[in-house]
Length: 124
Image 1 (spheres, rainbow, N blue to C red):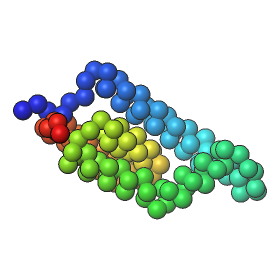
Image 2: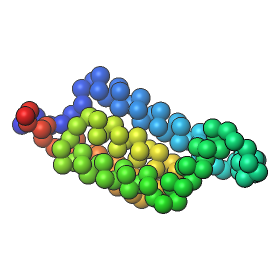
Image 3: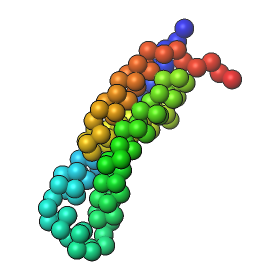
């Protein structure tokens, strides 16, 4: 019985995915959402990529989309573990933790940790 454990190369890719998602979420939160000057400029009609990202992120975290998506993908990964689902759930959960969807995103991270104790799926 072989457990679902990523190889060394896959672990490096997962680290890159997690750190990139975490870095962009931190950038968006502290330099885009919480800056009052950016909020005033975007509210006045500034049409930039940062204002567009700020608007989309605000709508998504107000409706808990990051947390729900991370939880659903992590649950799917728990049922049938794959690296693609693991990477997607990890990225969305990292963004959700930083962008105010802490409860559902941290539950998704817990499910991701549990998925490492699952058996590797049988080849079809």
